[in-house]
Amino acid sequence: MRSLLRWKFEHNTRLFAAGAGVVRSQSGNRTPGQDARVALLLSG
Image 1: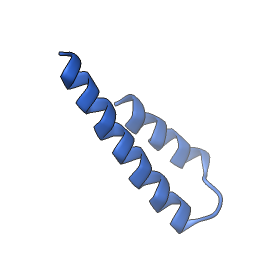
Image 2: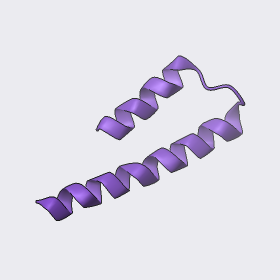
Image 3: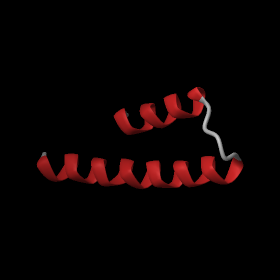
Image 4: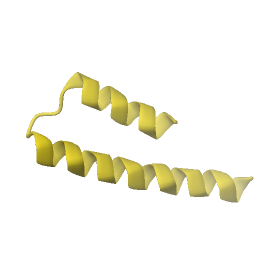
């Protein structure tokens, strides 16, 4: 169970890093909507 949680955390961290990179490349300013989607990804 612990290893599954660890994998999920690392997977979400990679998703967050990729998402943040895409958001940054698309626009210098993040919108609240984008922040909400990132928060959903992290909590998912």
